[in-house]
Length: 341
Image 1 (cartoon, helix red, strand yellow):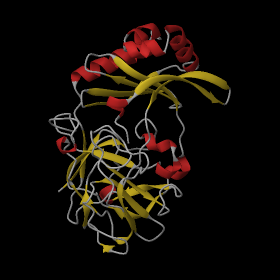
Image 2 (spheres, rainbow, N blue to C red; image 1 turned 30 degrees about the vertical axis):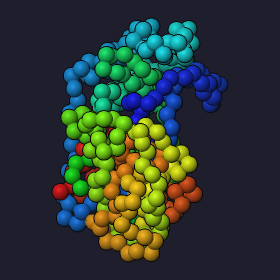
Image 3 (spheres, helix red, strand yellow; image 1 turned 135 degrees about the vertical axis):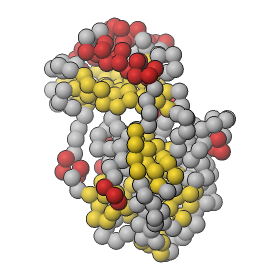
Image 4 (cartoon, rainbow, N blue to C red; image 1 turned 120 degrees about the horizontal axis):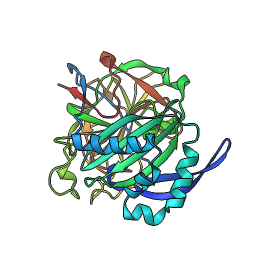
């Protein structure tokens, strides 16, 4: 996945759909792939909201108020120099006015502050349209996206037959996860719709020290465990971890990955593992909680994290993602911390 808070850039594209076309102000980001979830045998999972800062809320509230008042020029004037070079005020007005037609209210959907970046989203009164804003530490909007929202209730209601445990130990932060595209950018793509990207976060940061080094990231080298018992049907262990951090390997999107067949047409994918850390091979039988490798930064990954999902096919791109039924009734969503003892 790509850490949008740092790496998104602005561009203007034409969005076409039912009823004609509108200008879409978009943050361009590379798609990534996620991997499996599992918990230690005796793990007692909990989940809680990551504390939000007052400064972030202030910035988000200002934009939210401007949206409510249709003060679009004020929003534009808060954007970065790069943004304004790519998108003129006239283009901005045309795009957002057309997009806002029929909207009676914008309501806050999510607010996250991480690595000195702020990710804020709003939806209209019918949750049919969304807006994403990326704000830097100075309160400057570095990216803005107008995103029509689509829901998939039929697949949202179908969960895995098995209940799965947490695939790691300790506390991890859910950056991408949930049943909507604002909370989980995978949601648009059937093969990854219910995937999760999880990181380790301390004091609002995913790293400490040199941000270009994998070893600076809290998640790098952390133990990853099997979420349920099964048979290993794929184990890749020789893909180099991306360095400097931020360089991504799109030729091998999953990077080092372990795929476990749990039966019932359910396959766990645990991807972006550290090179040389995978402890299992094809044909191995694993039990829930068994160590399968270490978290890394291999493949189409912008920094150390675990991408987890359950699919109905051992080939990630030929199957479809299934919404995970978590042990203990968990329903992890973006902005929450999952803890396993």
